[in-house]
Image (cartoon, rainbow, N blue to C red; front, top):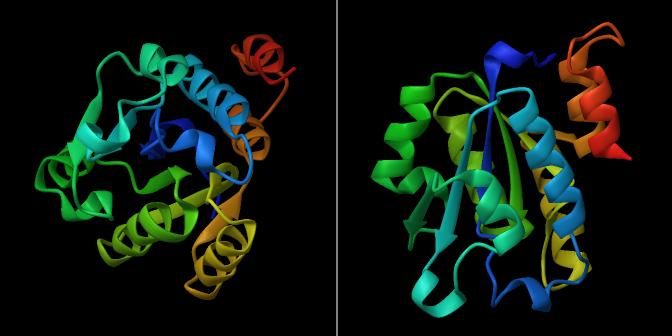
Length: 177
């Protein structure tokens, strides 16, 4: 399976103020690169917040980029939330990049449910984290066992560009550096 600009969207899962410091690795920079690149390529992105009253809002660096396309949820899988599920259907893209927190809970469950909906989830591994590295590694292994594609932010962005001749190549190259 190969993704292109006109058949892909993204879901940024629960990268919130109070939970980010507890992660085993910092993914804020990589997620920022991915979101900036996707926006440059005009790829639709849905953001989610898990119980923001307790976990805070989306971190400011990403919230600014998303321009309010953030949905609150209490369900672990974004697909179990009716407003988010409706938005996914409205966008109508068969390939869905999924990244954020926590890899072994909300990210993985969203991927599993996207697959059940007949879509192709792509777990962006360098933009996903868990409190424990072991949990993230098991989530990636489980995703692979479930035939969910695993990729990195840079590989996704260059796959979307296809060639150095893409009109946004220089912009994307600057974002990645």
